[in-house]
Length: 337
View (cartoon, rainbow, N blue to C red):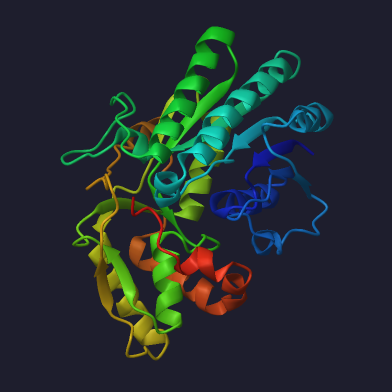
């Protein structure tokens, strides 16, 4: 059975990706340093599988090198990253350490490993590296212009991976995905936070005027795209992964309210509450994903209307998920500096 390493596998996208890989009959080694956003609830459906192993480890540690040489994976999916923009405004240092220094160490270990064994590295990044896109959609050739410390740290990691491909000939591919939503996402992010507040009869905080637009993709569609990149992607290439479906924050919030009214009794405090915007808040992200659609024959399958209903139902059916988290991490406002 072929082995795959997923870093950051206790997180949102990583845990969903692991579920897909196990179903496709790979043995998955989940390497996670166990930070605030890691959650053991996320691996409960496969934690006892004979095709799964969890190892606590930071990708900066030499232990990570020992792991990949021991298990000899055919692929490493790197999802180990600090991801929340608001936290990066309050404390950029953690983002520099995880997203830049961590990736540097991973590349050094992978460079040595890939010299001896056939393997691939898939580095998962974000559309935020392109910055504010007021018109049109960004192709893979669009220049990077990050706005937040988070986006800048991811941009730096992308450049490092690309440089190692060119200089050291490592077999790596970079993906840039739009905003994900779905089961197992930490409620510091917009959609699970709104769902938490709807379920718990709390106001629904929306930054600024709610006009900020994002391209939304259901997490399982993203994972299917990552698997396509692993199987058919070309070494050294960048692939945008998006749904071509943009919604602003007001539209997302109203969609959730419409769905939740049909499923639960809403409390009298469940109302949109506009709050102070965060510094440097980009107005719009939008990807052109024609490359992966044409070259790898991938396209998203789940509409936003279907995906948001699946997402609400998951959180409503898994209220224990919220109880595994610190209330401070759910409710405290960050990124006001």
